[in-house]
Image (tube, rainbow, N blue to C red; front, side, top):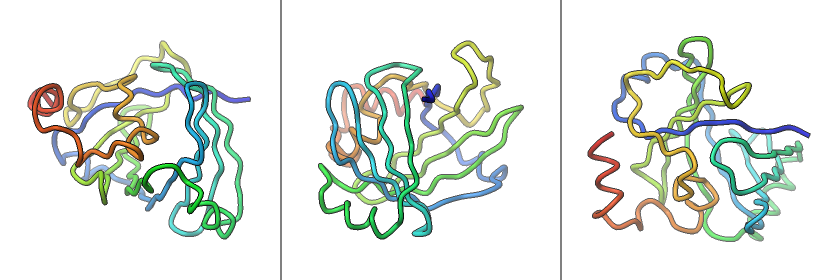
Length: 168
């Protein structure tokens, strides 16, 4: 059994782009989402696929179990999803001793850019790049499972969303 320990941030500039060492096109969909677990199908670059179970909720640490499955089986499961297919390009951006993942969303989540960092433990210190904005770790509206049901383009452009974007 493994755990995912990550922090998430809005991205405020494109300065990260000059540091990119790799990228992957990702499509993912949620087969089930409850108060305790989410079940996700992810297809990367149309060449590999995974079935993932993640515990919920947690601000920083979540149980995560991931299994490789054939792409054809993942494609066959997509119509069984709840909500939209979440589409994004994930960029790998080394910074300091760790590598950030910057997700540039498309489709119904177009306009949203998030950076996340996976940590070896909850108290691991990280160096925050200048291109990061507001931390959104634990804010469920930024979870991919939530974005499948309430996409970024449907959010109100007032209140908290605008406040977050302006401080980013």
